[in-house]
Image (tube, rainbow over all chains, first blue to last red; front, side, top):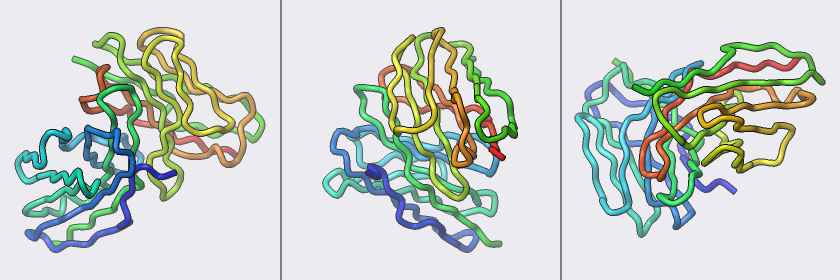
Length: 112
Length: 113
């Protein structure tokens, strides 16, 4: 039972353009969502998060949007840079309890 | 500041041998602790998580077990490894409460031969 889904395994974007990574979840108990960036053979690093009381959170070039009714969130990177090339994971948890579930990841390639 | 240590970085083990991976956290108390596995080309699969000493939740029935003998120590074990246990194992911690980010160790690349 995949509670957090990233349906696009890969995404290719031109440098300077917008990258949009999508994530869907099924568990209505989830109320805190996170995005991570991961390079091969390394642990993921935290990028940005959003709680269910918000629909948008922005940090520099990164913006996360949450649509609770659709159980969908997205990460926008503007402008995209070659250094953004990595695998991006979305994750979800409930504020009560410890479970933290990740999606399958989307490999972003930003071409110069 | 908080730090997380995970070792070893790489491990090659024969089928049927035991496994013990250790993770320790410094600079925080009573964290939530996690073990994840990333199989080749796959996502991060939650294996175990713990909200306190001796409290272990298992997400996937499998050949592995976890223990938390001390507040900031989390151990992943197996009595007999299978080929399918190969993968990249990641330990993580976060503040109790659920509304914060998790911080990951550098991972252990396990190859079962």
